[in-house]
Amino acid sequence: MSTLNLRIILIISLSIVTLSCNKSKESKIFGSMPNILICIADDASFPHMGAYGTEWTNTPAFDRVADEGVLFMNAYTPNAKCAPSRACILTGRNSWQLEEAANHWAYFPSKFKTYVEALSEKGYYTGFTGKGWAPGVAGKVNGKQRQLAGKPWQQLKLAPPTNKIAKTDYFENFRAFFDAKPQQEPFCFWYGGFEPHRGYEYGSGIEKGDKKLSDIDKIFPFWPANDTIRNDMLDYAYEIEYFDKQLQKILNLLEEKGQLSNTLILVTADNGMPFPRIKGQEYEYSNHLPLAMMWKDGIQDPGRIVEELVSFIDFAPTFLEVAGVSQEKSGMQQIEGKSLSDIIMSANNTTGNKRDHILIGKERHDVGRPHDWGYPIRGIVKNKYLYIHNFEPDRWPSGNPETGYLNCDGSPTKTMILNENRNKTNTQNWKWAFGKRSPEELFNIKDDPECIHNLAEINKYQSIKEEMKLQLFNELKEQGDPRMFGKGYLFDEYPYANPHDTAFYERYMRGENPKAGWVYKTDFEKEWDSDPE
Ligand SMILES: [Ca+2]
Image (tube, rainbow, N blue to C red):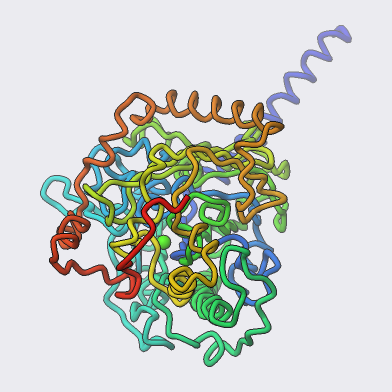
């Protein structure tokens, strides 16, 4: 045999060995159908988990997931409000690609299958406890209630440590789900904590969480720097810790049952903290969220910190991929997100997809504006900048003053900002949270994550702004965003799915007394400056 032939045989043999190695690795990762567990807090901003260095929240369970998995430093929801953010997770599509489901309190369109529904058809035992896709109306398929996040497990209750924390016993409901599951079936579960959504038991952070006002090392510059706000933040922290304690119990149970290694666990929150200028807006702390993933059988080189930008629309394709379900065969509408498997299953910390930017935006959240209109925004995060395009700057960004700024939950912090504006001791904080905005905003989110120095009108930033706007609009067109084709009115015209609150503005103005339990009576303005600039 010639040397050449020997070399050819050697190369062929090596290739076969390499191929079979890859195959066995693949079947280990993809063939085993790992359990999939998503744990989603309600209204918690990056960086308010201990793993990110915040010292006034103690979150050992989140930190464990990060330590034994991957901690993401730059994860964003496309839309910083409960229902649309959850719809993005469930479908892998941006909210402007979801018709009615772009809005808060929507009728969920039947055409958008969720990853949970897809996995359910492929042999996964699916369920959720707490808050799934909500609030909104999920609708029916073939006469049966749709279960967008899985079958509900809500029946087991507990006595919560404050009168504002949910009575749902998330852990015991998960245990009941786990016990009911046929042994051979993998599970796909959604733990949706109602915490740290408002309301809070006032002072619970100090009284029950053993916290001190002096623990708060920093107050955002758009809130009053005083003890009312510190107390409010500590109450928020206490509820984050409650969420984390239930996660801890779930992790322990999985470990005890020998199911921790083959479970992909993802922990995050749907939108930023329920404070003025954060939840329901599209600024850095609105959309930038905590994210950690752990999967002992799948994640390579655990303990990594990933800086790459990832979007919530990347979760669904990740789950489908690890479950071995192709997107084409999932029955889902085309997925916009990209699987994060390259990040979690290699030590590269990158998808190789050049994920150097993400898109954000919103349409209608809460009612309260004339005609139930929303406040349409689109934005792009790239490099160290956030560009925001406000399509209807004549509208009120947090809702109309006379109807209590309904897209900002009632809180001690909100009350203080409103009172300081009314008695003219500080009007600037009111402008940040509630005042009308320029059509364009540009922020350097590395130097100014609070987004208070708008660079959009400064000469030296014009080329950056124009470049970002062009990229944003081009991609929105490619994604079929109706707002790019003169059809933004569609989002305003979709009905608000809670009839108690529809036409809120008109009913309130003609003297009816519609209820809005998520704000305070004192939030409604008797007099206001209709043109504050
Ligand atoms: Ca929320």
